Length: 286
Image 1 (tube, helix red, strand yellow):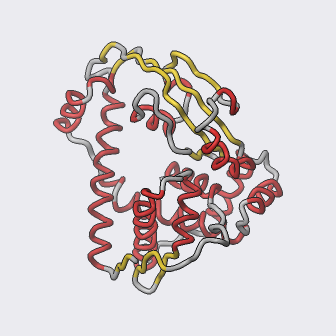
Image 2 (cartoon, one colour):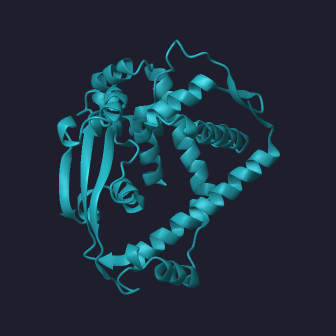
Image 3 (cartoon, one colour):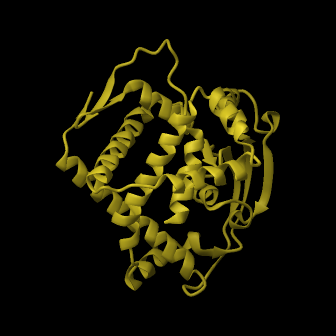
């Protein structure tokens, strides 16, 4: 569960500011006695680097799920002690800001987010991930048949010597506000012109963190990813080329196959859990 909480705490670094003042606000959804404003959905889209308005409904639904899980956590009396949150904050400050908490405050100021807001969001993320662990992850045990089926169905995923070439634009935490500017500039300029770095003929697992590797795996050649945030840093990827390798034996690929089956099962169980929560609560979408 520790890893889950770490990801949640780090992800909270990118908690976005409110929507521009020119946006007319209104209700996006109601969950029990709680409301989700349109400005909250737009702010979350901004945080995720989603500029396409067609993603609005999905982001709104994700926020509904968030409210439902927090409500379930409250009913289950799930709590995270303050010293645990403080420890996580210290880890974030040490890893991302070189131990200088003032740099965190400065970054939040640029995002127009107060420290209490960010702290509360971090705590909520930790509670959500603790609930997800208890209800979903800890109950997953891949069966041999499911693993064998996964291995046979996706031979390209379990190849030795698989290589890709990718271009990456990387922004520091204090540069997060430049994401929209860069996304817009990419319509006229190339990755190189905007400070992108090329990684040619590499094994992604040897170079990037798991979150980046997963994104690269699902990207068709020539496509650009959405913005990915890790430890407060923002990544934008373009897959330039891909070469398949020699297929591994089932034994050689065992750990990777197991991880893939667990991820798929976690997604299924999470969806079923959220659907139960929606059925048990009043949810209205505007």
